[in-house]
Image (cartoon, rainbow, N blue to C red; front, side):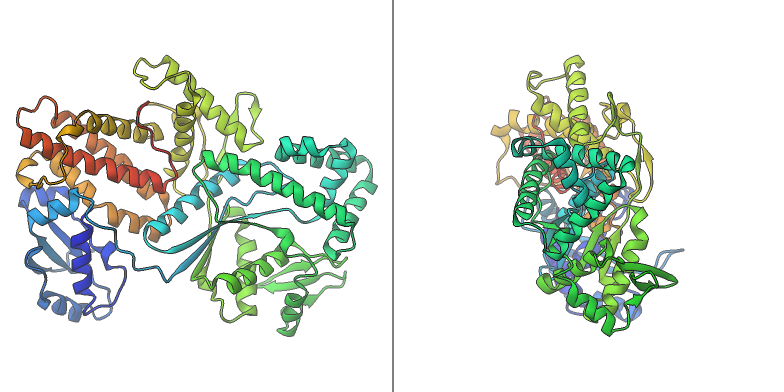
Length: 567
C-alpha cells in the first residue's frame, strides 16, 4: 500500500505546510502515464492559499534520496491547478507496495466522531430504511476508524412516546407472557402494537388510556413494576437485534434509548430554552421553537415531550460525555427538516456546539424489497430470503466448492449481495431492488468480491511453499500491461479511502473493489503461477497476488463483510 513512502513524503511536506491530510492527498496518476513513461510517481496539489509560495518551498526540500529520485513542478493545465510531482525509486516503492510494511498514517486520533445509525423503533417494524442506515452507518464508521479517528458507534432506539402506551395496552389485550416476549420480542411487540392500534380505531378510549400510560411513565407516577417490565422488553429486543446485526457485520459501542431523556430529565433544558427566548408559547398550550419560518412543537399541550425535545437533550448529553469533533446522524432524506431544527436549536442553546459539526447523512429509499411471501416487515425475513435464494443458486451451480449442506456460506453470500447491492448506489438516490440482479454470479455484485477473494486464497494456499518473506520485489518481473495495471490499482487504495471519507459515499470504495477484482482476474489469466517455469517469476507473482488479497480483504472488512475462503 506504499505506506512507508507516503509517510516519509508527508513528513517532509509538513515542514512547510502543517496538515494531517497530505498522506491521503498524495495521488497516483493514471496507469497509462506510468506505463508509457516507465516512471512511478505521486502527485500532490497544494491548497489554493499561498499556492505559488508553497510550490517553491516544496521543491527545495531535501527528500530522502533513497526513496525519491527527483521532485518537479507541473504547471497548471486546463481545469487542473499546478502540482508537485514526486518521481519515486522503483525498488523501495515496490517493496513498500507489495509488503505490508507498516501501519497507515494515523494522524486523527485526537478527533472523536460519533455515529448514530440504525436506530429502529421498538413498536414498529425494522424496515428497509433502517437496513440502509445500518449498512451505510457501519461502513462510514469503519472507514473513519481505518483512517485513525476515534469512533463511537451508537444505536439510539425509539422506545418512548405514545406508542409505548399503545404497546402496553396491546400486551394486556393479547395477554402476552414474559416467555413469549423473550422468545421473539420484536415480532411480539409489533403484534401488540398493531392489536391496540386497530382496536383504538373502534374504541377511542384505548388511545386515551395509551396516552395516560405514557404520561404516567414520563412523569414517574406509574407503578414500578411497569418500568421493570419495559426494561426487560428492551433487553430482550437488543439480544434479538444483535443476532441480526452480527449477520450484517455490525457491532455497536453503545445502545441508548429515547426514554433516557424523559420529561423529568429535560426540565433544565426547557428552562434554558426559555432563558434564551427560544421557547415560545402557543394558544393551545403547546410550546414551540422557531426555525427559520417554521414553528416546531417541543412540548405538547399536556406537558409531555416530543421527539425533537428528547433529541436536543440527547445531543447535549453526548456533547457533555464525548466532546465530539463531529456527530453524524445516518437517517433517510425525509428527516431533513427534523435535523435542521435539531442542529439550529441545539447550537443556539450552547455556543460550544458548532452547527457545522453536526451532520445529517441523508440517504434515499429502496423500492420493491420484499420476500416471496409478500411485503417484508422484519429485517431477519429479508436476510433469510437472501440466504435461501443463494443456497438454491449454490446447489444449482456446477462450480460450488463449499459444502452445500451448510447454509452458513449461503448466508454470508446472501448478506454480502444485499450489502453491496445497496452500497454501490449513490447514497441519496432512491433505487429499485431486484433479487435476481443483487444475487447474480456475474457482473458487479457482492458475489464478485467473495469469488475473487476465494480464488486468491486458494492460489496462495496451494503455493504456500513458494511464499517467502525475504523476496525482494522487482519491477522487472512485472512488465506486462496487466501487472502494471494491478500495481497501479493497489497503489490507489489510500487515496480511495480518503475520497470515500471526503464525499461520505461508500460507492467510491465499492467501485474501487470491483476494479481491483477485475484487474486481479486479468492478472490471474495473464500471469499464471503453476505453469510458469521460472521460480523467481512464480514468487514475484505470488507477492503481487498476496498484496491484492490483502487489499481486497481490507476493503471488505471496512464494508462489514465476512470474507469467504471457498464457495
